[in-house]
Image 1 (cartoon, rainbow, N blue to C red):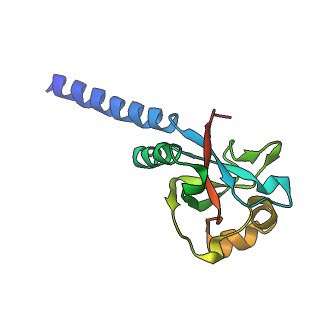
Image 2 (spheres, rainbow, N blue to C red):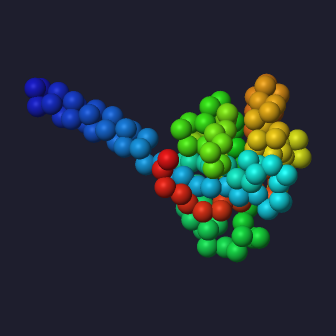
Length: 146
């Protein structure tokens, strides 16, 4: 009985350790926008995930020409999560790392600019829309953790 408890404790510790490792294996990607923005802060933002299925899709997207890559759509969370920025500008939001996807189409209401629309009207986006899917967005490149 004593050895059984030992193995249960080891299994629990291994499970906790794996979950902790999963949290540290985020990969980060710059999202570009095809249209030329009036404000430089609207030219890109950063997303992150550790979801293996999504990472596979992103890796496949990066093999495609830029004009063939899918749009990015995600659930909004408050704060920049320590990585969502463009240059020196830190956004006031980020995508839920477990709730964003690559899409070929999205509803127009979720379209907008990362700074000029979302940052400046965050209350509206968080209260009413809760998602962001800018048309013309695409995974531009993988970037190092910030």
